[in-house]
Length: 300
Image 1 (tube, rainbow, N blue to C red):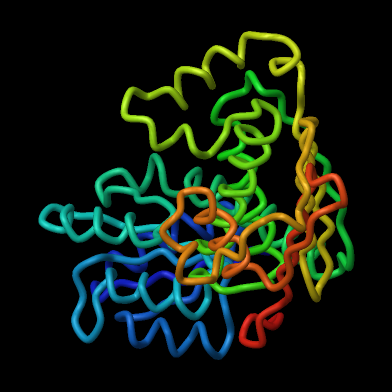
Image 2 (cartoon, rainbow, N blue to C red):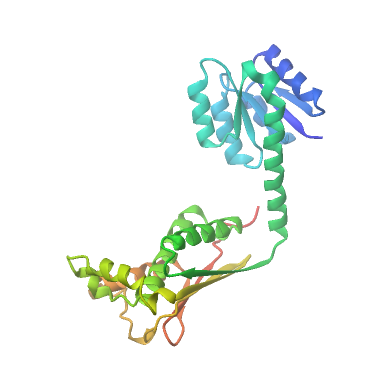
């Protein structure tokens, strides 16, 4: 049986909402303001929180902030009344799951609670399953003509690292940057064989040649293969193109002062700075990036 914590400083409104919820077989608990609600949540977490917006001690907005920070798996539904619309919008932006106007409680409340509980249950089950998962392998295949698709893959991999709790949010941005640079190298310099020096051309020669080659053989037929091996300790991501490759031993050291300003070294500098380990295969058409678990991102 699901338990709903109803938070409202108005006794009649609490009882009214509780009546609707209990009528469909759910249990209820009641709190008179945000601070009271947080104390109850810490002692005995409910399945869902239904809160008024305008209350003494701690209003609905602050309550949403605290629940989001301390109990992120508990969804919050807002009860809005005239005069609370602006604060309700703020609460939705920072994490509330939905809202029901008080004048529509009889019609919409129980249906909204059921819908949110269904979604929350799936999310909690996903987290339970992930807690038992020790290893995962992914494979992506990206064609030259699929412009922009690599950004979606980068986002997906960032979400995977977040789900596996391998790093914090700041590192996720840096890892995303490193992956983006690695994809650009594979697509543009690898499969399309575009020379970095062309970027210095003021007439847009780099972009023009790139668009031409996306429609020409053999460039248009080449693909990028991405594998990701995830464990509780690290993520290993390999990006391989079908271009002719290069001799990795001839790469200039991007960390040397004389090379930092060069266009050709910027991407590699970012990749090596943001990842824990970076290696190339002998033919230079494959890069392997490793990011190890950061000490402060342990499982809860």
